Length: 387
View 1 (tube, rainbow, N blue to C red):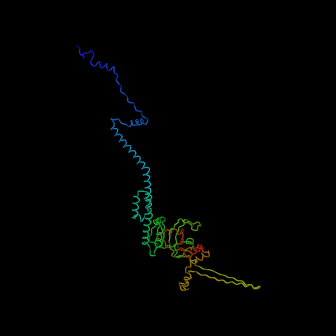
View 2: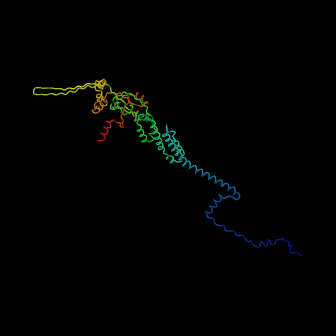
View 3: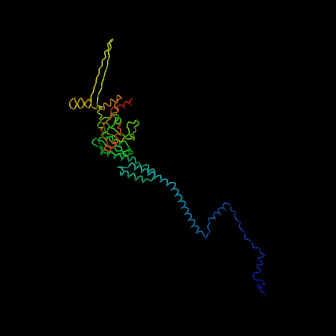
């Protein structure tokens, strides 16, 4: 008897037939979701920066390094732009202001004040300033004016002579001025550092020098003993040229004192004659008459006679006192005088100016400052401007 398993077909053959006869259900496919254009762009952009899983670690390091490099480049650009556009121009302007201020400082603090304490203090302030405003706010002129005034006032006190005078020496044009000490103090108090830094005060060292000059050179002959005169030098060889020019605005020597004046002896000779005629006619008779007065003398001979008691010496001296200046004043008043007169003057001048005056005697001119005008000149000026 055959067993059920003893089938001529291999085991499982029937199951294969069963599978053929039965339909196997197919798996249902999921419907794909529609992608919008924005999502597609984002996916594309993400794919460019999205790292694969295997390279995530290395790419993360690269991104960090890239960010650091980018940051450094941006900072470098910002710093460079700040330096070249803002910082460097500001520093150049600051340095220029410092240089200008230092030049001003050194031009005012010079000579005896070059080593003054305020000079170093102000220089440190200028160098330490951090802004242009700080540099400009440093008032060098104010401090320098104060220091120069203090210095000059002490020098005036230490450099007055027995006549209570001092002498100011000007640095730039090498001229000097003799002045009373009170005028020097007033000059210092009324001026700022621009003028005060150009002068120094020293004790007057003067001598009296004789000069022979024409009437034109001698202040038209109207200067008197005791007059204060300034001496200029003409740039012309001949002093009688009508186009005489002064070659500088400041006097070569100022504040000189006229100690004595002498004219030629011929100016003292007097020879005058005064005649007055009168004619009387009576009918056919004519009676002419003439009254003549003559006077002849010599001023110097009168003085000689007075000395040997030939005349009353006191009366003679009273009569002839200031004869020369009286004569010049009369000539001035009547507008008639001896234009060819020459004068021998004894003038007090600084010792260092003696050679200059002697060498230029033919081209110097003595002028009378109106601030020290004689009485007649002051009267003329007052009468002119009081009209």
